[in-house]
Image (cartoon, rainbow, N blue to C red):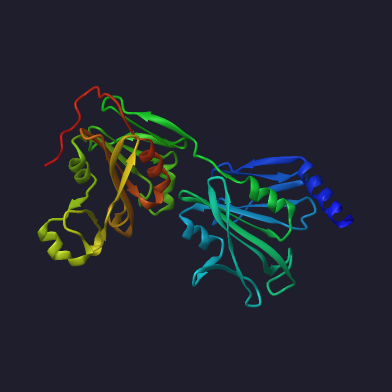
Amino acid sequence: MRTVVILLLAAFSSLAQPRHLYTHPSCNYSFQYPDGWQVEPDDDAGFPCEVRVRPADHSRSIWIDAGRGDAEAAMSAAYFFREGNAVKVEGRKAQKVTAFPIALGALHGMRANGVLLECEKEPDGGKLCEHDLAYLVQGNRWVNLQGYSHEAALELALKSVAILPPKSVTYVHPTCGYSFEHLTDWVVRADPDEKCGVVLVPKDFEKRLLEEWDVDIDSVYVEAGTGGFEDGAREADFMHVTDLIAEGYGDRVKLGSWVAFGRGASVVEPHAIELHGLRGLRADQIEVGFFHVQGGYAGLGEYSSAFLTNGKRWVVVSGPGHAIDSIDLALSSVALQRQVSPLPKPSS
Protein backbone atom coordinates (compact mmCIF):
# COMPACT_ATOMS: atom_id res chain seq x y z
CA MET A 1 0.00 0.00 0.00
CA ARG A 2 2.83 2.41 0.86
CA THR A 3 4.37 1.90 -2.60
CA VAL A 4 1.07 2.71 -4.30
CA VAL A 5 0.65 5.86 -2.20
CA ILE A 6 4.20 7.00 -2.96
CA LEU A 7 3.69 6.47 -6.70
CA LEU A 8 0.40 8.37 -6.63
CA LEU A 9 1.98 11.25 -4.73
CA ALA A 10 4.84 11.35 -7.22
CA ALA A 11 2.39 11.44 -10.11
CA PHE A 12 0.34 14.25 -8.55
CA SER A 13 3.57 16.12 -7.74
CA SER A 14 4.63 15.87 -11.39
CA LEU A 15 1.26 17.15 -12.57
CA ALA A 16 1.39 20.02 -10.10
CA GLN A 17 4.77 21.27 -11.35
CA PRO A 18 4.70 24.49 -13.39
CA ARG A 19 4.64 23.88 -17.13
CA HIS A 20 5.73 25.96 -20.07
CA LEU A 21 4.40 25.99 -23.62
CA TYR A 22 6.85 25.93 -26.51
CA THR A 23 5.72 26.80 -30.04
CA HIS A 24 8.17 26.25 -32.86
CA PRO A 25 8.68 29.58 -34.67
CA SER A 26 8.43 28.15 -38.19
CA CYS A 27 7.34 24.49 -38.12
CA ASN A 28 3.86 24.99 -36.61
CA TYR A 29 3.83 22.60 -33.69
CA SER A 30 3.76 23.07 -29.92
CA PHE A 31 4.15 21.09 -26.71
CA GLN A 32 4.48 21.59 -22.98
CA TYR A 33 7.63 20.99 -20.94
CA PRO A 34 8.36 21.06 -17.17
CA ASP A 35 9.76 23.92 -15.16
CA GLY A 36 13.55 23.72 -14.97
CA TRP A 37 13.87 22.31 -18.47
CA GLN A 38 14.89 24.24 -21.59
CA VAL A 39 14.20 23.91 -25.31
CA GLU A 40 17.15 24.16 -27.71
CA PRO A 41 16.87 24.19 -31.52
CA ASP A 42 18.98 21.55 -33.25
CA ASP A 43 22.11 23.06 -34.79
CA ASP A 44 21.96 20.59 -37.68
CA ALA A 45 20.68 22.45 -40.75
CA GLY A 46 19.30 19.17 -42.07
CA PHE A 47 16.74 19.09 -39.26
CA PRO A 48 15.23 22.61 -39.16
CA CYS A 49 12.17 21.51 -37.15
CA GLU A 50 13.97 19.44 -34.51
CA VAL A 51 14.45 20.62 -30.93
CA ARG A 52 16.16 19.17 -27.87
CA VAL A 53 14.46 19.46 -24.49
CA ARG A 54 16.54 18.85 -21.36
CA PRO A 55 16.99 19.91 -17.74
CA ALA A 56 19.62 22.38 -16.59
CA ASP A 57 22.08 19.59 -15.67
CA HIS A 58 21.87 18.15 -19.21
CA SER A 59 21.51 14.68 -17.72
CA ARG A 60 18.95 13.50 -20.26
CA SER A 61 17.22 14.74 -23.39
CA ILE A 62 13.96 14.55 -25.26
CA TRP A 63 14.20 14.97 -29.02
CA ILE A 64 11.17 16.31 -30.90
CA ASP A 65 11.00 16.73 -34.65
CA ALA A 66 8.28 17.59 -37.16
CA GLY A 67 7.78 17.38 -40.87
CA ARG A 68 5.48 16.86 -43.76
CA GLY A 69 4.09 13.58 -45.08
CA ASP A 70 1.63 10.79 -44.44
CA ALA A 71 1.87 7.99 -41.87
CA GLU A 72 4.50 6.16 -43.93
CA ALA A 73 6.71 9.25 -44.06
CA ALA A 74 6.27 9.79 -40.32
CA MET A 75 7.12 6.16 -39.64
CA SER A 76 10.32 6.38 -41.65
CA ALA A 77 11.41 9.66 -40.05
CA ALA A 78 10.95 8.17 -36.56
CA TYR A 79 12.87 4.94 -37.47
CA PHE A 80 9.81 2.70 -37.37
CA PHE A 81 9.44 0.00 -40.02
CA ARG A 82 6.98 -2.67 -41.09
CA GLU A 83 7.68 -6.34 -40.58
CA GLY A 84 4.80 -8.47 -41.77
CA ASN A 85 1.64 -7.10 -40.19
CA ALA A 86 3.53 -5.43 -37.33
CA VAL A 87 5.23 -2.05 -36.96
CA LYS A 88 8.55 -2.25 -35.15
CA VAL A 89 11.60 -0.29 -34.01
CA GLU A 90 15.08 -1.79 -33.99
CA GLY A 91 17.32 -1.17 -31.01
CA ARG A 92 20.91 -2.10 -30.35
CA LYS A 93 21.99 -5.76 -30.05
CA ALA A 94 19.51 -6.68 -32.82
CA GLN A 95 16.58 -5.88 -30.52
CA LYS A 96 13.19 -5.45 -32.22
CA VAL A 97 10.36 -3.81 -30.31
CA THR A 98 6.79 -4.07 -31.55
CA ALA A 99 4.98 -0.72 -31.60
CA PHE A 100 1.38 -0.11 -30.60
CA PRO A 101 -1.15 2.48 -31.83
CA ILE A 102 -1.71 5.74 -29.94
CA ALA A 103 -4.15 8.61 -30.44
CA LEU A 104 -4.47 12.14 -29.09
CA GLY A 105 -7.52 14.00 -30.35
CA ALA A 106 -7.08 14.38 -34.11
CA LEU A 107 -3.54 13.02 -33.91
CA HIS A 108 -2.83 9.34 -34.35
CA GLY A 109 0.33 7.27 -34.62
CA MET A 110 2.47 4.57 -33.06
CA ARG A 111 4.67 4.17 -29.99
CA ALA A 112 7.42 1.72 -29.01
CA ASN A 113 8.69 1.41 -25.43
CA GLY A 114 11.92 0.07 -24.01
CA VAL A 115 14.05 0.44 -27.15
CA LEU A 116 17.74 -0.10 -26.27
CA LEU A 117 19.83 2.86 -27.43
CA GLU A 118 22.98 4.57 -26.13
CA CYS A 119 22.53 6.48 -22.88
CA GLU A 120 22.97 10.25 -22.76
CA LYS A 121 26.59 11.31 -23.50
CA GLU A 122 27.59 7.74 -24.35
CA PRO A 123 29.46 7.11 -27.63
CA ASP A 124 28.21 4.66 -30.23
CA GLY A 125 28.57 1.20 -28.75
CA GLY A 126 28.53 2.56 -25.20
CA LYS A 127 26.23 1.86 -22.29
CA LEU A 128 22.61 1.26 -23.29
CA CYS A 129 19.44 2.69 -21.79
CA GLU A 130 15.78 2.07 -22.53
CA HIS A 131 14.10 4.71 -24.71
CA ASP A 132 10.53 5.31 -25.82
CA LEU A 133 9.85 6.46 -29.38
CA ALA A 134 6.58 7.76 -30.82
CA TYR A 135 5.15 9.57 -33.80
CA LEU A 136 1.82 11.31 -34.35
CA VAL A 137 0.21 12.28 -37.65
CA GLN A 138 -2.50 14.78 -38.53
CA GLY A 139 -3.40 15.07 -42.19
CA ASN A 140 -0.13 15.34 -44.06
CA ARG A 141 2.02 16.52 -41.16
CA TRP A 142 3.73 14.61 -38.37
CA VAL A 143 5.59 15.04 -35.09
CA ASN A 144 7.90 12.46 -33.53
CA LEU A 145 9.34 12.24 -30.01
CA GLN A 146 12.11 10.24 -28.35
CA GLY A 147 13.37 10.10 -24.75
CA TYR A 148 14.21 7.85 -21.83
CA SER A 149 11.57 5.32 -20.82
CA HIS A 150 9.45 6.39 -17.82
CA GLU A 151 10.50 10.03 -18.32
CA ALA A 152 7.71 12.29 -17.03
CA ALA A 153 8.81 15.15 -19.31
CA LEU A 154 8.43 12.90 -22.34
CA GLU A 155 4.91 11.92 -21.27
CA LEU A 156 4.02 15.58 -20.76
CA ALA A 157 5.29 16.54 -24.21
CA LEU A 158 3.55 13.59 -25.85
CA LYS A 159 0.18 14.32 -24.21
CA SER A 160 0.31 18.04 -24.99
CA VAL A 161 1.78 18.09 -28.50
CA ALA A 162 -0.30 19.91 -31.11
CA ILE A 163 0.09 20.45 -34.84
CA LEU A 164 -0.88 24.05 -35.52
CA PRO A 165 -2.38 25.57 -38.66
CA PRO A 166 0.14 27.67 -40.60
CA LYS A 167 0.05 31.44 -40.20
CA SER A 168 -1.63 32.85 -43.26
CA VAL A 169 -3.22 35.89 -44.87
CA THR A 170 -5.97 36.10 -47.49
CA TYR A 171 -5.34 37.35 -51.02
CA VAL A 172 -8.31 38.63 -53.06
CA HIS A 173 -7.81 39.16 -56.78
CA PRO A 174 -8.82 42.77 -57.53
CA THR A 175 -10.84 42.02 -60.69
CA CYS A 176 -11.23 38.27 -61.31
CA GLY A 177 -13.38 37.34 -58.34
CA TYR A 178 -11.41 34.71 -56.44
CA SER A 179 -9.42 34.51 -53.24
CA PHE A 180 -7.14 32.15 -51.37
CA GLU A 181 -4.87 32.08 -48.35
CA HIS A 182 -1.08 32.03 -48.39
CA LEU A 183 1.70 31.83 -45.83
CA THR A 184 2.62 35.14 -44.23
CA ASP A 185 6.23 34.88 -45.41
CA TRP A 186 5.13 34.51 -49.06
CA VAL A 187 3.98 37.21 -51.49
CA VAL A 188 1.63 37.33 -54.47
CA ARG A 189 2.86 38.68 -57.80
CA ALA A 190 0.96 39.22 -61.04
CA ASP A 191 1.44 36.56 -63.70
CA PRO A 192 2.40 38.42 -66.90
CA ASP A 193 1.15 35.51 -69.02
CA GLU A 194 -2.34 35.21 -67.51
CA LYS A 195 -4.88 38.04 -67.12
CA CYS A 196 -6.44 36.39 -64.06
CA GLY A 197 -3.31 34.59 -62.91
CA VAL A 198 -0.93 35.25 -60.03
CA VAL A 199 2.34 33.71 -58.89
CA LEU A 200 2.91 32.92 -55.24
CA VAL A 201 6.56 33.01 -54.12
CA PRO A 202 8.46 33.21 -50.81
CA LYS A 203 9.68 36.64 -49.78
CA ASP A 204 13.27 35.47 -50.09
CA PHE A 205 12.64 34.04 -53.56
CA GLU A 206 15.75 35.54 -55.15
CA LYS A 207 17.93 34.19 -52.34
CA ARG A 208 16.42 30.74 -52.76
CA LEU A 209 17.12 30.86 -56.50
CA LEU A 210 20.82 31.35 -55.76
CA GLU A 211 20.77 28.47 -53.28
CA GLU A 212 19.08 26.19 -55.83
CA TRP A 213 21.51 26.99 -58.67
CA ASP A 214 19.03 29.23 -60.49
CA VAL A 215 16.26 26.60 -60.52
CA ASP A 216 12.77 27.73 -59.50
CA ILE A 217 11.33 25.06 -57.18
CA ASP A 218 9.06 27.42 -55.23
CA SER A 219 6.67 29.31 -57.51
CA VAL A 220 3.00 28.36 -57.14
CA TYR A 221 0.64 29.41 -59.94
CA VAL A 222 -3.01 30.32 -59.39
CA GLU A 223 -5.30 31.25 -62.27
CA ALA A 224 -9.03 31.51 -62.88
CA GLY A 225 -11.38 31.40 -65.83
CA THR A 226 -14.89 30.76 -67.09
CA GLY A 227 -16.10 27.19 -67.59
CA GLY A 228 -17.11 24.00 -65.86
CA PHE A 229 -15.46 20.74 -64.85
CA GLU A 230 -13.99 19.78 -68.22
CA ASP A 231 -12.64 23.29 -68.80
CA GLY A 232 -10.97 23.33 -65.39
CA ALA A 233 -9.50 19.88 -65.95
CA ARG A 234 -7.95 20.92 -69.26
CA GLU A 235 -6.55 24.13 -67.79
CA ALA A 236 -4.93 22.01 -65.07
CA ASP A 237 -3.24 20.02 -67.87
CA PHE A 238 -5.30 16.89 -67.30
CA MET A 239 -6.22 14.83 -70.33
CA HIS A 240 -9.42 12.88 -70.91
CA VAL A 241 -8.60 9.29 -71.88
CA THR A 242 -10.06 8.55 -75.33
CA ASP A 243 -10.09 5.24 -77.20
CA LEU A 244 -6.86 6.19 -78.94
CA ILE A 245 -5.06 7.07 -75.70
CA ALA A 246 -6.36 3.96 -73.95
CA GLU A 247 -5.11 1.81 -76.79
CA GLY A 248 -1.66 3.38 -76.64
CA TYR A 249 -1.21 3.09 -72.87
CA GLY A 250 -2.94 -0.24 -72.29
CA ASP A 251 -3.96 -1.05 -68.72
CA ARG A 252 -2.06 1.99 -67.37
CA VAL A 253 -5.07 4.21 -68.02
CA LYS A 254 -8.85 3.79 -67.93
CA LEU A 255 -11.07 4.79 -70.80
CA GLY A 256 -13.07 7.89 -69.88
CA SER A 257 -10.86 8.86 -66.92
CA TRP A 258 -8.72 11.96 -66.51
CA VAL A 259 -4.93 11.60 -66.31
CA ALA A 260 -1.83 13.77 -66.00
CA PHE A 261 1.06 12.79 -68.26
CA GLY A 262 4.58 13.39 -67.05
CA ARG A 263 8.03 12.90 -68.51
CA GLY A 264 9.14 9.51 -69.71
CA ALA A 265 5.58 8.35 -70.44
CA SER A 266 4.77 8.52 -66.73
CA VAL A 267 1.07 8.70 -65.86
CA VAL A 268 -0.66 9.98 -62.72
CA GLU A 269 -4.40 9.53 -62.22
CA PRO A 270 -5.78 12.53 -60.32
CA HIS A 271 -8.14 12.01 -57.40
CA ALA A 272 -11.44 13.80 -56.85
CA ILE A 273 -11.53 16.71 -54.41
CA GLU A 274 -14.45 18.67 -52.99
CA LEU A 275 -14.09 21.82 -50.89
CA HIS A 276 -16.62 24.45 -49.83
CA GLY A 277 -19.16 23.38 -52.46
CA LEU A 278 -16.54 23.35 -55.21
CA ARG A 279 -15.35 20.15 -56.85
CA GLY A 280 -12.42 19.19 -59.01
CA LEU A 281 -9.37 16.96 -59.41
CA ARG A 282 -5.86 16.90 -58.01
CA ALA A 283 -2.69 15.09 -59.08
CA ASP A 284 0.62 15.04 -57.17
CA GLN A 285 4.06 13.66 -57.94
CA ILE A 286 3.78 14.36 -61.66
CA GLU A 287 7.26 13.91 -63.10
CA VAL A 288 8.28 17.01 -65.05
CA GLY A 289 11.45 18.64 -66.29
CA PHE A 290 12.88 21.66 -64.46
CA PHE A 291 14.98 24.34 -66.10
CA HIS A 292 17.40 27.02 -64.95
CA VAL A 293 15.81 30.46 -65.00
CA GLN A 294 18.61 31.70 -67.27
CA GLY A 295 18.17 28.71 -69.57
CA GLY A 296 19.28 25.10 -69.63
CA TYR A 297 17.84 21.80 -68.46
CA ALA A 298 18.16 21.14 -64.71
CA GLY A 299 16.71 17.64 -64.36
CA LEU A 300 13.48 15.95 -63.31
CA GLY A 301 11.30 16.85 -60.36
CA GLU A 302 7.79 16.45 -58.96
CA TYR A 303 4.89 18.76 -59.74
CA SER A 304 1.31 19.10 -58.47
CA SER A 305 -1.74 20.39 -60.31
CA ALA A 306 -5.36 20.80 -59.20
CA PHE A 307 -8.53 22.67 -60.02
CA LEU A 308 -11.84 23.50 -58.38
CA THR A 309 -15.03 24.66 -60.08
CA ASN A 310 -18.59 25.67 -59.26
CA GLY A 311 -19.72 24.58 -62.72
CA LYS A 312 -19.43 28.04 -64.21
CA ARG A 313 -15.99 29.21 -63.15
CA TRP A 314 -12.77 27.42 -62.22
CA VAL A 315 -9.56 28.06 -60.33
CA VAL A 316 -6.34 26.13 -61.00
CA VAL A 317 -3.53 25.82 -58.45
CA SER A 318 -0.22 24.24 -59.51
CA GLY A 319 3.39 24.18 -58.49
CA PRO A 320 6.48 22.08 -57.71
CA GLY A 321 6.44 19.42 -55.02
CA HIS A 322 8.88 21.48 -52.95
CA ALA A 323 6.14 24.09 -52.44
CA ILE A 324 3.45 21.60 -51.41
CA ASP A 325 2.60 23.46 -48.18
CA SER A 326 1.71 26.58 -50.13
CA ILE A 327 -0.20 24.55 -52.72
CA ASP A 328 -2.22 22.82 -50.00
CA LEU A 329 -3.02 26.07 -48.22
CA ALA A 330 -4.06 27.93 -51.37
CA LEU A 331 -6.17 25.06 -52.68
CA SER A 332 -7.93 24.38 -49.38
CA SER A 333 -8.94 28.05 -49.04
CA VAL A 334 -10.01 28.89 -52.60
CA ALA A 335 -13.24 30.88 -52.76
CA LEU A 336 -15.10 32.35 -55.72
CA GLN A 337 -16.65 35.80 -55.50
CA ARG A 338 -18.31 38.12 -58.00
CA GLN A 339 -15.75 39.20 -60.58
CA VAL A 340 -15.29 42.85 -61.53
CA SER A 341 -14.14 42.16 -65.10
CA PRO A 342 -14.91 39.25 -67.45
CA LEU A 343 -12.86 36.12 -66.84
CA PRO A 344 -10.92 34.53 -69.68
CA LYS A 345 -12.91 31.99 -71.67
CA PRO A 346 -11.70 28.38 -71.90
CA SER A 347 -8.77 27.85 -74.21
CA SER A 348 -9.48 25.75 -77.26
